[in-house]
Length: 347
Ligand code: DOR
Ligand code: ZN
Image 1 (cartoon, rainbow, N blue to C red):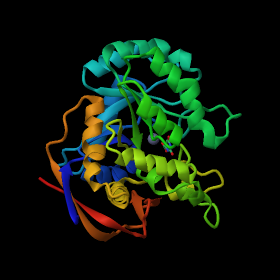
Image 2 (cartoon, helix red, strand yellow):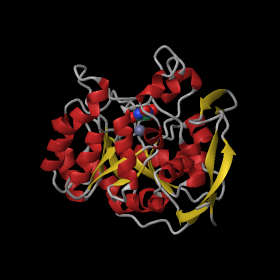
Image 3 (cartoon, helix red, strand yellow):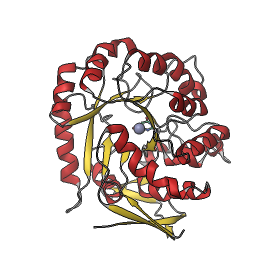
C-alpha cells in the first residue's frame, strides 16, 4: 500500500502552551488534526470555565488563516475545583473534559489533587452530567520506583475510582505499560486510553543511549521493551478503547538540555507519519483509521470528521527545530531524520 486515505484524525491529548510558544507550535497540530483536546497545565493552570474560554480565544487567534481546527478545552482539577462551574462550562459547550493530575506528577502539576478522595464530590457531579475525566496515570509516592508508577496507580487510584463512579467516562492518558493495556482491555464500558507515537517507538534504553538524552525524556517515562510491544499490539488490535493522543509537549532546548531538564517531547510535526510507520511495521495499516480517527470520537461521543486525509509513502526530511519568536529553539522529535510518510489533507 503506497497511500492510505482515512477520515481526518483528532489528537485527544496535546499541550499547546501559550504566548509565543503557542504561536510556534499550533500550526503543526492544526495542519493535520481536525480537533484536539487541549491540556490545561499552563502557568497558572486553566481551572475555571472563564479561563478555558479565554484560552480558547487565544488559540483561535493564533490559528493560521482559514484553519478549521477545533480546540476542545479542558479544566485542570484542583483540590478546590468548583463542580458548579465545571458542569456549567460543560453544558455551555466550552469545557469538554476535566484533567486530573496527581500533585507533583509532572510539569506544572503542583496545583494537582493532593488526595484522590478530595476529588470525589466533583467526580460524582461529573458522572451525573456526563463530563469525561482524563487522568495522568502515575502515583507520586516517592517510595514507588518511577518505572512502576503507572502500574501502582492502576491498583491504588484508577481501579477504585472507576468502580466507585461506575458511570463516569474515564481516559487513562498516555498509557505506557502492559499492565495499563491489560487493565483497559478488561475494564467496564466507558474506559479508554490514549497512546502516544513515541511510546510506540522507543523503550527506556533510548534515554541513556551513549549518554543522557533529554529529548527522550517524558512522563510517564518510557518503559521496558515488553511494554512497548504490548502498546503496539493494543493499538493495532482494532480494539476501540485505544485512540490517538500525541502528548505533544514542547519545551525549549534550554529547558530540556539542563541539569534538571523538563519532561515532554514535541511530536506533533511527525505524529501521523510515526503512527503510520508503526502500523505499517506491524502489518496493520488497515487498523490505523480506527485508532486515529474513529475510536476517539466514539469514546467522547462526537461525530467522526467528514474531511479526509491521505498518507503517502514518501521520504520526507524533518527540520531539527522550530523557533519560538525567532529566538529559542524547540527540538522536534525525529528532527534531522527522514520519516517515511507525508500527510495530505483534503479540502
Ligand atoms: O512529559 C510530559 N510533559 N508529561 C506530562 O504529563 C506533561 C507534559 C508537559 O506539559 O510538558
Ligand atoms: Zn500530557
